[in-house]
Image (cartoon, rainbow, N blue to C red; front, side, top):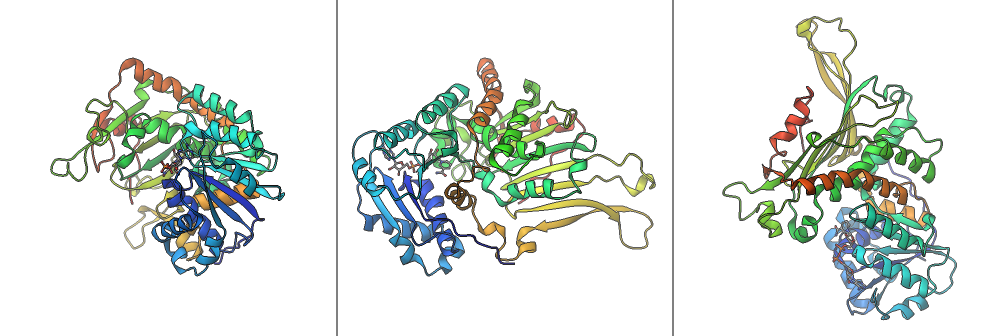
Length: 489
Ligand code: NAD
């Protein structure tokens, strides 16, 4: 099945931090792939803006190298590279000084088309960039800014950042990226929930036993140790990515599929979250496995702090206090150096009220599993009779909708989250971006949890690299008579 590509209007995109890791790994190769797919017009312009002093040719070479390294198969097969590179310019700029701003102003002068400014730099520079864009007359009403995570490190800093950006831009001009929202399956989650009659009537505490969300990574902190150690799994993953997934799975049907209707409903979910008690949360920190220490150092070695109390793993149980979900627990889990890379949302339905089958036929539950990575897709476990003459025995089989199988080679997993989100910025569609009040509400929920750890000098439980977290995380489920889904690649 060939997906339909609707070209966007011509635009100017300035990437502040255009030489950085994120620009090279995601933004630039993603733009090239959209160009190859015919979605980006020839009249578009991309301007890298960063501190390094280099000319346009050198920057184009850097972009071309990034495409080779990170562009994937579509980029390799595409012969439009020269045409794409022609759209690219570069301006050496200092976010905190005067260098480069006059050149950028000249480059962006009045063409009356979409102007997007991607802040792919440290959040410490967001305010400087916003201020300078205004000073140099570029913060007009056609302008959009895209800001990367982290958006604050607590409620206070997030409020400050929102206030700083609001001083120069209206909310409808601010695109706060959470790349989890750009994933195909995440949008499919909304399509499945609100486009089918089948699920929505069952989507509540009367029929759903519990919901689990797992985002497991096999990588450790790698070269980001210094940043990560100040952050931890709660700030780096739960407050944003897992929270957004929780919102989409739990929200009420919005009246329309438009940015504010969707974001209003997500906000209500966050505001209805119960505070988490200390016994409902397990923090972990990975440790090296003997003999593998040099290849895979433990967390404390990786961050260079033998006493670090930052968590690289988190499992928690929470409730949403509203009519739909009262009584249905939500279990969230995320961690680094786990056994497999896997992101999955699982909706476990309740037992049938009465079984007509003999005890030894087995008792089974419907499980809807929404897989974000790898192998994006949705599976519904249904109970059938085990084939053959062995009497009435029940087994679970999956109704499988792995997108690569269902949609073929051109299926959804070929569009990376960043590509989709950047095209949404150009289209002016904020549905998949976080609104300022959502981000603040999420921090308002996480702040007391983090403050509790700090007050108690909480030390995370060690877990072996390559395992699925401390034993206490399994206990968290078992004492409720439940189990985590296996983390499978
Ligand atoms: P990086 O350190 O690799 O790159 C930083 C970029 O900012 C460089 O291009 C540098 O020239 C530019 N820069 C620094 N100081 C500047 C100044 N004073 N004026 C102008 N430009 C300046 O960082 P990164 O990893 O690309 O991350 C960029 C942003 O994206 C950060 O907010 C980060 O938290 C976020 N982010 C990164 C990733 C990732 O995978 N790298 C993932 C999610 C979010």
